[in-house]
Amino acid sequence: MHELPVPPSGRQHVIRHDAQTAVVVEGGGGLRTYRLDGVDVLDGYGPTELCSGGRGQVLLPWPNRIRGGRYTWDGREHQLPVDETDLGNAIHGLTRWRSWQLRESGEDRVVLGVRLLARPGYPFSLDVTAAYALDRAGLTVTTTVDNVGAAAAPYGYGAHPYLTVGTPYVDTAVLRVPAATYLPTDEAHVPAGRAAVAGTAYDFRAGRRIGDAVLDVAFTDLQRDAGGHAEVTVSAPDPGRSVTLWMDEHHRYVQVFTGDTLAADRRRRGIAVEPMTCPANAFATGTDVRRLEPRDTITSRWGIRPG
Image 1 (tube, rainbow, N blue to C red):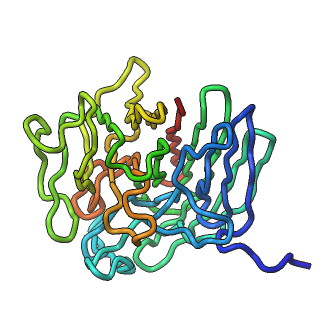
Image 2 (cartoon, one colour):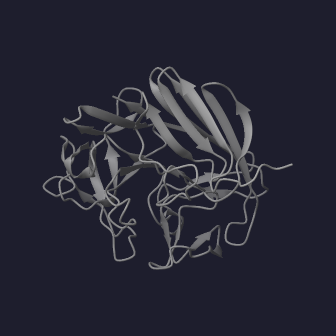
């Protein structure tokens, strides 16, 4: 018999390594909480709560928005469900409310998977796994996508964790984003070009206090280390904490969101740092969309390092 009631996010998978604990959920295959020494690294949500604001969700086969849900692929027009109704966009993909099934588990690692079958608007079939692993360096998320259909598929990926360094609001936190370029947006929050961050309110390359800045913007042209990783860091001198989100070379963009449009009890409590392989509206513009031929596989990684 099934245990009732079922939590809104479904089955809860707990992984541990030394003083670190994370909870990965069946609902959307997302990351509900991540803690170090019992202190939150993520501004997550409770076991009896419905995920709000995309917290910890996996965003595929596209991240962010598609204007009007319309795009053309290989000469055919497609219409996706418009689920950001106030702005008229399709948002954050098709798997974040699906039931992801357990494929592997261990003390410090869990792998969930989902098969996204062809449907109107996205007539392509993908098999997806998301592996969450803890070690002494922190949390690593490895996502592998296989095109199991008969046609080439458009593909993009993103994730939506909200970082926290223990400040009541993000205003007093210090943000560092090593990006030379940001994407200005129009009234539908869809990119309307590219601009250098130099001399603008979006220049966080040296790290500075967020203050009253309202951010819901994508950055690109990211500075990377010798291994191809880019890092975004949030820190707070008081209480003396920091957290870094790193992303591999597949993630050419990062969205930063201060949560100003969330419900009042969650507004500006954490800062979303979202690694993305392509920008908003990419299916319509073609910008950095990955073409997955039948039997193609792509694996990408990002992670969180608490300080």
